[in-house]
Image (cartoon, rainbow, N blue to C red; front, side, top):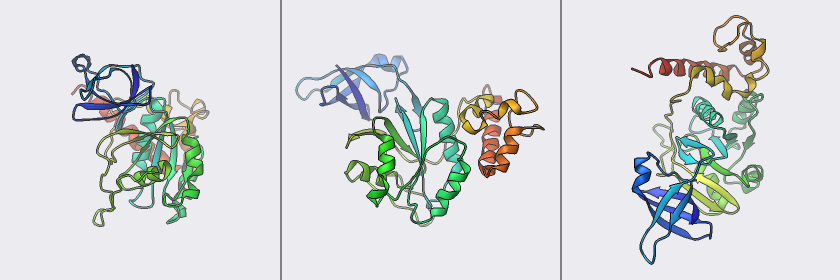
Length: 289
């Protein structure tokens, strides 16, 4: 029988079969020997148990995409979520966007609590104007602001990602019509408290949403420095005009990408690109140490 893995906790997995029923499974030992870790979102082949006995997860089918932070499979749309509080970490957002785009996953920027500070949305729209990423501004507690986001998610396996405390669980609750565990913002650090402890695929209200743990530390492991620019849509069409070929769009004279980014209101995003470029160069140089 085929099905979709919706969660895995403590070596036990839950899958929804193509018949619509839920099954509790253990993974066959051969998966461990093959170094395959089942993930939420995986399409799997399984053998249901009889009575109260668990079944067996026999095989993980080929994945269309794989992300490790958060650990999810077959993702189609990554919804990068920020809010006025905690302070937006746009470097984290850019890291996640790079990770997604290099994995072939579409992105959408979601700005929650927009009613608190509309200037955040205005600034982000200017910075990402040429990045070819849809932007939705919402207020999770006002259902009439969620229609655009809901429409963008229908028919796709989606995942919210970003700092903890920006309201991902609140948005999810509003979209699927069921209250999820909501965290609070720490008054001392202005960082969110983690509420989601493991990745889980929610299939409700016409949506397929991967609910994942919040996080704030993320490294671009294994990304080659020259591949980084492939994740920046705004560089396309400009790179060929740079004086030097290939151009890394760092400090090279005659770099049209740098000149354009600095002139079009995206200077902060460009400087974050340079920060990520330096990071990937260092990691690539140190990979055999």
